[in-house]
Image 1 (cartoon, one colour):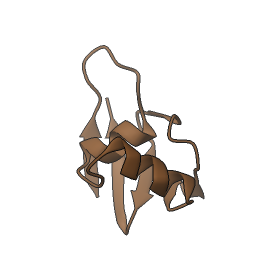
Image 2 (cartoon, helix red, strand yellow):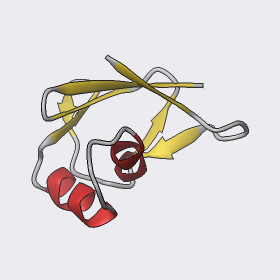
Image 3 (tube, rainbow, N blue to C red):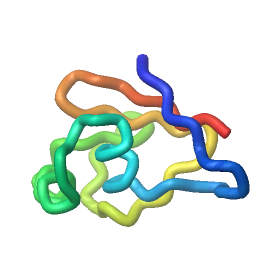
Image 4 (spheres, one colour):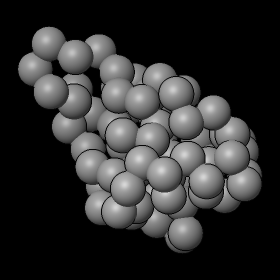
Length: 71
């Protein structure tokens, strides 16, 4: 499982940004399309909103890779 650290002072990161930060998507457009196509899960459930806020402890999954958000 990969880990993404939130920046100091941030309480969350949006799902589209997290996909890019994890290196799973090359652009925001690619992230948006894959999220809206139902290819991304957050905490085990399909998520279709790229603006979904991810907080410390949340886990998202895309293309067989799990990523945990940490403070």
